[in-house]
Image (cartoon, rainbow over all chains, first blue to last red; front, side, top):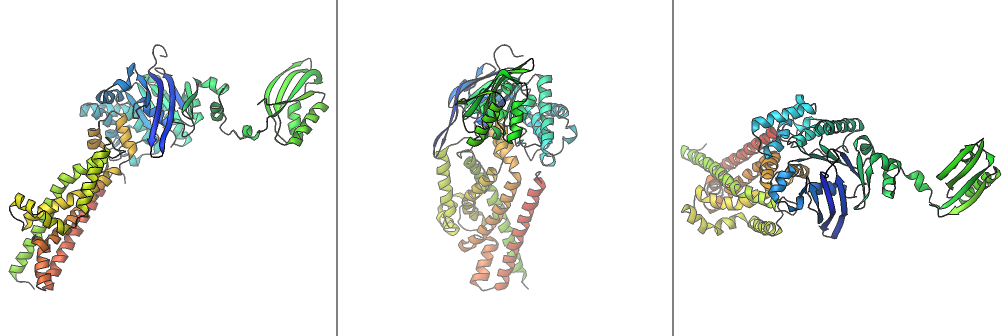
Length: 338
Length: 219
């Protein structure tokens, strides 16, 4: 696990859609490695190209440029027949479940097995096993229209597992589900990953999904991969604008500070160690944005510096600086710090 | 009300109408169903986009559909003679009926198949299904209720066409209605034949609706 060649290698992948109103670049020059046995997230705002990217992984969309290596096979070099064969080792689940409405649950799970040419009896035995795994044995004869969203997705997962795939691609698999059901589905995927060692690729626009289940994540932003790394790292240190937007989804507090007016407060030990910023915020009933802070308490005196971003209102800013000076601090304005 | 000879004639006409309608429908589906599938598959969002094939086929179908049916009947008389040896009677009528109905059926099939959720087709593709498997195992079964309803509409339309062929000696109830009711002012015979046609339409339509509902698991 995690060693050797990655299971999926995306190399220089670009996708252009030709529409009546001209060419649209959806993905540009994507490079990405997904290791065997990991749960990998691809997150981005809607329209960022993530759904197209996941469809490039099994060549439902053919890349305009570049290619994808799956299990050391260059997918672009395969014939159509070989591609059908390879797809059998890649399960996929969807936001809208995409079950066959005119087939019952058991026959839905049998469907990929039929395509793989498995005999009917064997297929049904295997399908029942899978339904047991996803806890839906009692629904084998039910039709999809009789199931809840969460149950439908479980059927879809059983179906995706039917041919013992190496990877499961999840395209917004929990976006149509309520939070409790989402948790259940994610737990099931996690369990599958652990027990069967199947690599899972999760496409989502919800950071909470990535947090819950993924080990590594790629942030995709306007056609490009903005950042790739361990979820923990990206969470604590988002280095790109796109990552920041996803980690702080509200973003309003930050956007509020449009001015680049900052001030640097120097603690040279002449003031006592008191919560000076907090007091100031309480006094003015206006928030400030702490950009940088490095202070120490040495024998009850404060040393170090804090850089804050002042509110847009110029007058309040002036008053705040005056307030800080009155507390015996050295205050200087620094512009263009942010 | 009617003498036995008239009753026998109406009975024979009834059977002829059914015969023409059902045989023509079967043959028209034999042509129309594959054409409908080709239209869907070669569509620009289809399984195997082929804009050329699609638009040529589309134009041919539209041409045939825009031709008034009686004109079509007369136009194809040489072909009818070639196939059936005559241009009169129920069997001869089957030829123009099939030619007239097949393009209509192709469009009905096309619209039924296009109702199938694109996502389900995509799911099948992601499992490595070939276009043939998708047509056979996804499109046709998933569209079944809609195809059956379409068939009910098509068959009743063909019945209507078959009645029209009475004007050119086609046989069946329409022929009787025109010869006795229209040319000889025997209103009674005309009313009876029309009533029989109404009943056939009602029954066929009802059968279609029930079959479609019975087979539909979407509820």
